[in-house]
Length: 380
Ligand SMILES: NC(=O)c1ccc[n+]([C@@H]2O[C@H](COP(=O)([O-])OP(=O)(O)OC[C@H]3O[C@@H](n4cnc5c(N)ncnc54)[C@H](OP(=O)(O)O)[C@@H]3O)[C@@H](O)[C@H]2O)c1
Image (cartoon, rainbow, N blue to C red):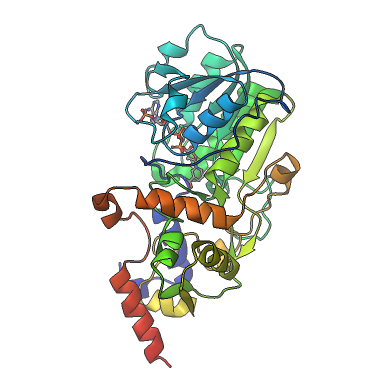
């Protein structure tokens, strides 16, 4: 469909829905370090933790941090995805093989203190695991998404804001990713009660993210020169470093008493400040040309897909980068400097094979960026 057949708001929202479900996943490369040797000194002592998933993006950071804190870790996967880094840590983990869709036999008759569920978006999967593990685990943390909200038409959305509704109870279709996440949360809460924790991340960023979304920015800034930047340096942005999220998830679930639902994205920041911090951390000569939303729309530059992590702060997306994280901060979520994340992401990206880097999954292709910058310059 041609863009001019849509209103700008429709275009923005459908672009975000189509290309930006906050949960697209993938494979990896090496790197990254969480603080080591904490040994759970400030925690509850060794716990038996089951991670449903564990080998793709946030899972490996959870595995490393949990082991560093002295916990015993089991992971449950199909055995297909190879952990991208921390291989020596995975040698200390119990690997349980099965399939969330139809084979949970490896979990039968076992007991854990806490479960971290990374790998579900389908409510039936959460119904099956919570049913099997009730009575065999004290706490169940489900990794949801801020996509669970019905919309982002308000600023400062907190955990009480309405969730999206499924078009029918049994739907299993990623076009209803957000409502499915909301239903997964509800099942967890129904079954685990005061042992249920639901965490709603915003865009997760950092080394190992094969969706290439936020990665676009540090990699583009590292290349230097004139960078097309979205709309205005004062537009809001939020993101959560994969290590900050993963380590907090382990701390939340290792201790009783943290039941509840938490938005888990970064504190609100201005897009211009984020890019400046990335530039400073990378020592780049990049300059930023801020091109207004209308001009971007006219030139078919899509929010989120082409300019990752950015949506116009208006209409149905006004609140997407302005979600409240007060509850999570109160519960101990912390944020590392974005420059650290940028350096590690670029280091990881540069370690990937050239063929992989040649076809990034998100961002504005260099030729298109040059074309739009030239057209904008011609406007005077
Ligand atoms: N990326 C974002 O920006 C973002 C934002 C908001 C929320 N989220 C949510 O965050 C979570 C992140 O997941 P992640 O990939 O980083 O977690 P992860 O725990 O690192 O990896 C996902 C794991 O699921 C396993 N898996 C996939 N299908 C399975 C099945 N049918 N049965 C058993 N295991 C299966 C995979 O291993 P095998 O392939 O070997 O089975 C893999 O280990 C997701 O729930 C996502 O919706 C992501």
